[in-house]
Image (cartoon, rainbow, N blue to C red; front, side, top):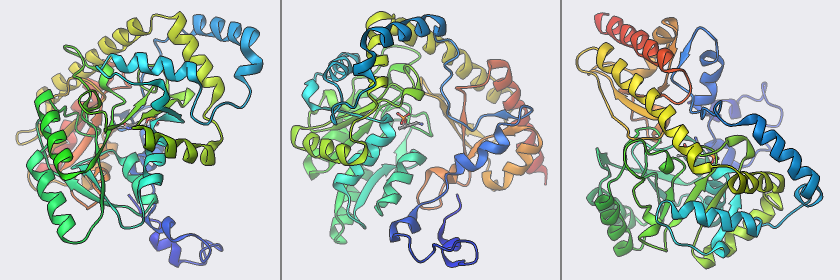
Length: 412
Ligand code: PMP
């Protein structure tokens, strides 16, 4: 991740240097974006990106149904809409959330441009510069980009194989408050955390919520992957156990990301502020996308489509785990996710995933170095591998190439 900071000082490169807001100083170029140019070369197996694999969507049928939509409701669907999002869409979202045991009122849902914009709105209404956001160690790089843009201080909370540690959460909040810090919320990804793939079991969710409640810390639950559980049924959302939780959802992984439709479910007063912020940001979230998605949910077997996605990702996850078992040198460890897109690898002692990257690219495989997912420089022995996009055969081959790069580095 390269900070914009050095270029702020270099007036030869940027004539506007004295005019930017202070907050741009804490904005960073995403490590994932910087990797795209290399990772997209056809000979490279990219285990770097997190693009959902949507090739199996019934495109011809979708085309016919969108055609019908334009014929019958085009004028309304292409008009401005409600700042909070269309009521029919919010009603559908309540149905989708019921799959993870959430009961909610459509009135408490705000539609956003993907859950990425939900993160922006939540941060916008809660964060003043210097306020603390607690996040798992490690956490989603895109969320941290948003938090940085609002000059939040990100404080990581330790995880184990069952996710966030409740005692570590308690200690962090107590210590930060003793130091005079305003702890504004806990940001957590309880299902198939991006980047680790780790899931909090039900009991751990209860424990985390109990600590948060006791200490008066707001919880923001980000759950774009929950319905992509591979074995068994999705675990009940934290929001289903506590109506004070602010919940972020998305159609990006259960349908398609290009529509840019996500949502926030929030307690009434928060929802009101979010709606005002949303009106200021985009007037109304994409109306045509909401019509298109509601039309899809009404007329297609969306639960069947999610089942198709689940088995497609299962084959990819299995190829990755088989490949890692077959090819990783001794001393390398990794997580075994039950859904989502990511496996988190820990390299043998003494190796650095950033330093290894040129060697890996030389072997024609790409990944995201672990430091991208920490605000504080940790993660140098880690890498995130994603299994969502390439074919199972390519994923397996990718792990072979990666194993060779690591083994060669160990011999140095
Ligand atoms: N949260 C997490 C944990 C994610 O992995 C992503 C996408 N990579 C998002 C939010 C944003 O997704 P979208 O804006 O497409 O809903």
